[in-house]
Length: 383
Ligand code: PMP
Ligand code: GLN
Image 1 (cartoon, protein in one colour):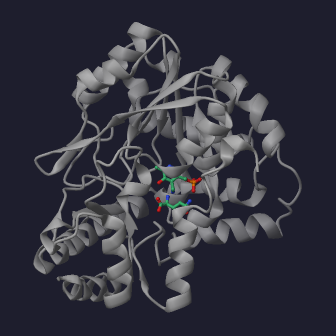
Image 2 (spheres, protein in one colour):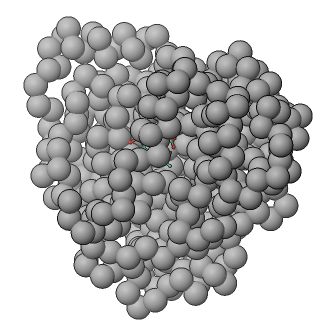
């Protein structure tokens, strides 16, 4: 294994799901729903296969999906993208992140990102030969945010881009317009690209508004926005994502993407194009259902005696495990599995610093009875 990849080992998600499967534990670790997406969406993929969508589609994506993505960005956010040269379909958001960072970072370039960060960010930054400069999100009351001075201090003459994720995994923070303005100011002042991971764009709660940073003044021309169908339609196994960006940035990302995977699975593209146009009522119902699941798990964490953090979006709620006498989320997760048969993710795996040590991430994108069962078991960990 090349030096730059050493230390990355197996992802925490694969490890934790394997542990749950092996031991029959309740899996609130890896974020995937335990129910299917809309029936007609699934049927559309099956029909696409039966209808012959089984050979290589065009490298940048099938025209109907690129058009559907452009229509979605325009209808929902008022952002206009030309499907011909400003939309690129990718193998999930994961390939979009990889191709974007590999396309934009020279060896030694610095990437400013917020910790805790989604695990693939660090690995791809390393693979690109770039250097990560984390800015820590810290609890302000029960919501995580950043200190603008720390963000500014993280920027150096070597900074190439700012990588952000909102709604944010694992804290559940939805960056406010004011927070995004601060990030946008830094991008404009230092001529940086913003790479924004918006895979949870539809999954916000209590009226929290997802604001794409590309909608802020002067940002559309310097933003690569990434999203994917997995979370929106509960089809995480479909691995169908996309970027929207100005033509020069799409060209750069496509130059890399064409040699990573060339193109993406054809039948799912047809189905996702259908979904973006026709299944938004289903998505809204799913969002409302996730909000009530968030409420149930948050209440269960509270009732058990742990401290839940506020989550404004995503599939996840974090708990502070110190009320149970733990200072280390990894140790808590070990005991949680052993005594309660529940798998969760220690937040520290998403950090460079030790700021995440007392937090544990639970996924609530599960059936209500699974959430209730897991919540009831939490108190077994009290020491
Ligand atoms: N970004 C974030 C923040 C995620 O939580 C995930 C996991 N769903 C991804 C990217 C990867 O998305 P995909 O499965 O579409 O590759
Ligand atoms: N995004 C999901 C999570 O954060 C899982 C993704 C993965 O398994 N790589 O749990």
